[in-house]
Figure 1 (cartoon, one colour):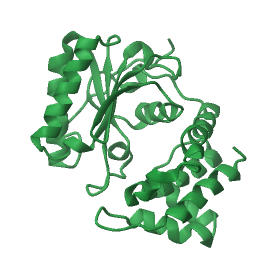
Figure 2 (cartoon, helix red, strand yellow):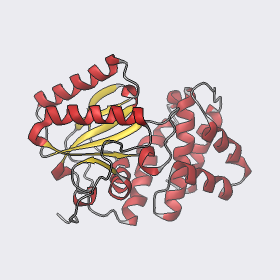
Figure 3 (cartoon, one colour):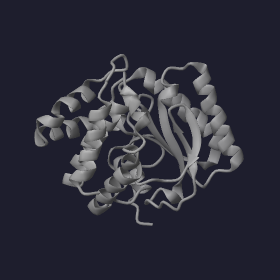
Length: 266
């Protein structure tokens, strides 16, 4: 294992973000995860928009990672699922916006698609899933930008991610997830998913160009500047989208996904 040493010193661990209601949800999740995992708990981290500075209270999720000392038993996984169900049923603000996973420490250092399935949480669903290529990107962002709620510095848990790995991750992500969507685009009936897809394509284009990860806001504006009028308006609508707005751009979104894939001959 080739991880760096050192720890994050959290100067304000009770207020890890600028949003008091988000902090209340996170501290509740941390407390419950520690209670269930006991000595198996290693650390809890935030990534995604909260870490990159793109967080929007109207549209963003709360992306979290819990690292455990070992793979979890069926009994422990069941307890975690019951805990998340209680959160959803409580009506607590942000409970339905939690998106994350529980990963054993030995499986954190580097990406391996052959690792066993681990507990995941997304859109109000608790399930088991293996790693896909996008988790190379998530490791990269957690290592460099992750906010530590408890535990060691993420650099002690995750190896550096080389530029070639980032390129492969984005290519894999486009081929594994987005390319099949072109033949089965029902998800894009949702305005929320259209906005998500458009901004994800911007990030993919930026990353394939520069071998590094930028926020969706930065990636979107770069794409507007570098890929002309055809996509500029579509991207602007995605940036401005809110839950009470209908984004009726399914066909254009499909075209943008196809353009992104074809741009790099994937």
